[in-house]
Image 1 (cartoon, rainbow, N blue to C red):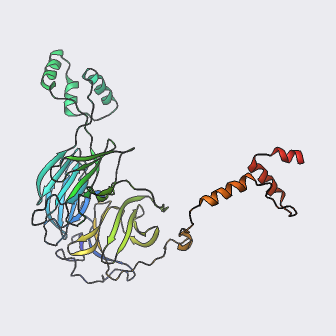
Image 2 (image 1 turned 90 degrees about the horizontal axis):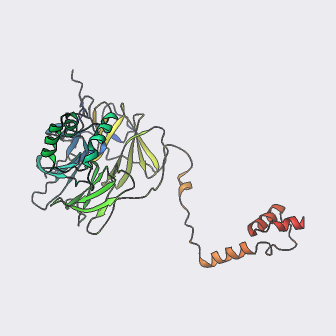
Image 3 (image 1 turned 60 degrees about the vertical axis):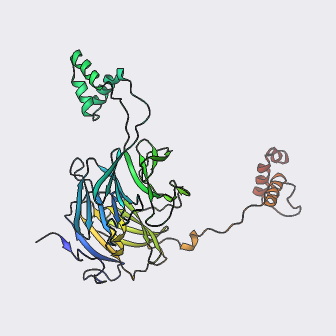
Length: 416
């Protein structure tokens, strides 16, 4: 018997009943598909959903890490059937789709970040390869051998060219080696760590977008979608691993945000995904935990918990096929799960984790301090002792506090 469990049609995700036999009635999600032996090994940033054939049927695009050393592939699924497969040379670090022109039909391109390269696919075929610009500065060839020997002794992995050079012992062979490679400059090269898109001049869903990528040398590059030239470069204090981009490049955009709130969780986080369900205007954050649960947060409040039999390592929420509320999950053991948000699902405005009432966290509308208030505060601080009303019984601690604020503690000693 096949180990693959199919609960939905592999052709159309919409024509399914709204209830599944073994599903709890209180659940807000439909179990649409589960393949525990899909052998997919990927992360959230390597999964995307897009209408890459302009037929209204959105496809699932996954950059599979394979074994980590080989068998890395770009896979495209139509429903639950594998539609296309392309080999990737190095480990992928991000996958996005973007519109790079205004040609009809409006088919987006696929961008895959791998090593120092961005591979562009159009119509499921290789189209262009962009290479990151080399870092400034050159290596000193006179101390190169000593440096390479030190790196090798430390256990670092060297390139084939460096290993070949270290194998040479004859001075004549070394001279010949330098003659062959003397015109090939020694350059430092960085790699891409994260990838995202940024609308160029219009906010339409099918508007032309720029590629935004973060690199290991603590930089961010914004690429032109047509000429693939660097439009902007930014430096960061540390290496970026995730990118959240808003706005338009020709108008105003933001890449780096600020912390809004913090939530303490019972287990370690394995991945995070954003939910933007436009039919109901529902926005939330999905947080997968090492316990095998996926917590749904609306702002800082826990509104739902999805229980999974395995640890979820990758998630993507969006339109899949012709269904708007599909949740794609890849587990630690390589399984593939698809859930669909029920059209009747209602997320109540209450925190399932308990604790103080939500009203306690609402910020009070405190008016700003006026100049009159500040001046009055300074006057009271400077005249704290004279302002004490004669005849009233004040606590001795109050009198001492006033004196300390004035910095005249010696007065207490004299009066004592």
